[in-house]
Length: 616
Image 1 (cartoon, rainbow, N blue to C red):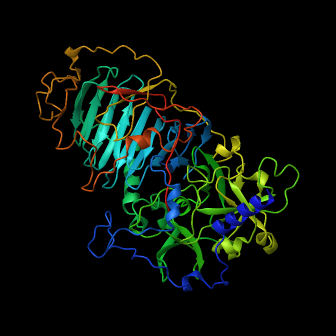
Image 2: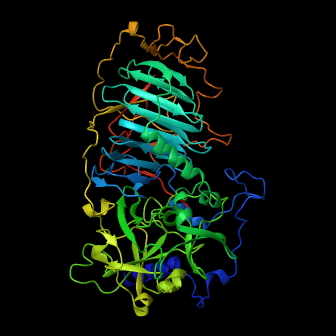
Image 3: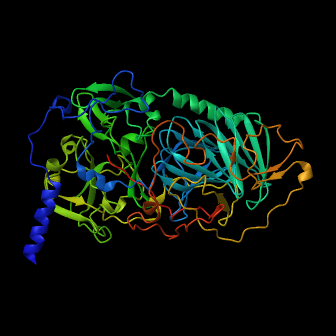
């Protein structure tokens, strides 16, 4: 048995450790690693870069793909004002939101009477919430999103050309964006839903019996149950303060420079412009240098939070702390700490944090029992360029975790040789509050020479505090009161490819049969008229039914949504239905196959609150 354990330890050290290297000078003086140029040749469109020769290069070791999970997307809270809360899909815990809080499948964002928020899904798609609004993230995949608006007013903004497939569901209808633009949706307390399109938007609205195209500059009002709703077209409703706030956000995002320096897969870089500068390093090309005070280091200010599927994830305290903590690599050079985003041509996936973990020091009283790796302190170090990322989540992680003792951390991680490159804290405080200078502990060179490198799943257990983004308490003051059994309409025709509809939790209420003499029309199976209706196209002034097929739809409109000419991104249904056999969260719900003519998504409409991951 002793020989077996010794053999395991030797294998673990060989998997983690790199050959000892001499103490280097500034990283910017080191020999460059082979790579393609970071920028496309002159004249190549920045939103669709291609490598000058051959396939796109990889940003790191082949094994980094172990952490890829394209069916488990992660959104972020990009902006918030006032009272904003998040209800986790896997635990139903209600927590106060902060900027750069990660959101996964099944999570809900709720604003109070004075709250506003912007949720960023990727480099092109945003959801903005007005006061008194609840939005549920029912599906997040790589290039496929389904959001549910339970109450209030939300604007879905397609800011840039993208092939992402999107369905916006409400209790009565669903909307599919077809072009860049503004899609404002208001779910009113009386059951009427208003859809307003601006800024060049074109969309298609689906009901159980058909669909209707809606054009830029128009508003569609829908009333009645999802069994047989009625709609009426009018001119666009006047803009209000929320629309003007949303427009000001568009201007900020459109003038951002940082997105031009990174791959389209790396999102959330717009915040970086005012907090640092881009410069050229001879070894890595374009890198970003943050404005930071003396002694600052990456992953030294923030907190470790517990997310469904991903487990421990870093939430930085810096306002720019999204992209540099979930993509790329850090190194210390002549300009101090710098962030390298990787080649602009490479594909990337979201990571909960790009660090290496290790334990050190003897456990104190009560430490080591609940943490399972026999050390009193846990430390982490930012990964340097081309260092391998070892996921602690998903099928690629070493199940149960492994701690390799008597490892010299400086031989494994280059940034561990930087004076402030390592951040450590007591193991029994990990994930239970903020990380700051007040609770950091400093390891000696002797401690680091005999540390325990952690490979695979982290041995620290989560607590109720681990699911909080901040120590502030959540508040539902002014938030809409919605039911857990709220059902949302989802049409197979508008649903993103590979996304299944969720099962309803309660019986459908009888359809509201409006009086057509007032102009309300229902979605009719008649598809004889193939021309799009103008706002004044109904002689009764009137409410109409949705007809079978889409009148006035552009060619290909019945397929997946397209905003640009790029190839579409499609998600395989088997991946969606059973991605790796992973645990789907505490609810354990999965969506059954949809039924013909539209289906219902109950509650959060999620798969139990899961998410997707990334290669970097």
